[in-house]
Image (cartoon, rainbow, N blue to C red; front, side):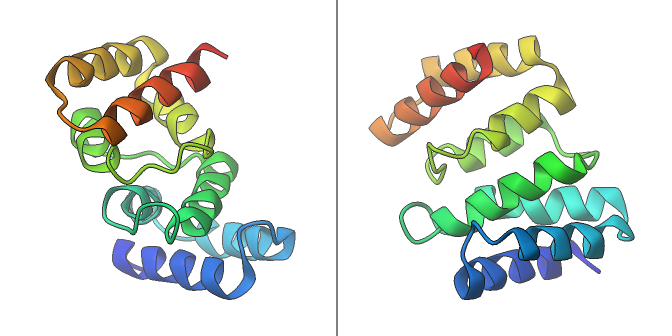
Length: 139
């Protein structure tokens, strides 16, 4: 299974079954366990970096966040690349996304990258996303 197929499956299942369906989370978790880890990571991260932003993308992001938390797949993508692409699309209630990134890349690296992006950002939505991610990371 390729990353784009994983993204499409998550988006479709979130649309059909919602983001709070425990059967779907279990089903997708078991389906993705046998797929190459970086493909899973890239497919789930694409929901945040290339998918629809809130409100239309909220359910897909929530489902992808739950799957990132359950599977914790290793990613070969760069943190700066992920965050830059995701900030304007990020659903603020999905705490699993920044927590997964902190677990994968390190909390202090994540906070440093958010600070760097905050100094360079232009949009209010990006500022809110950065502040919310910092909130989730600081607990």
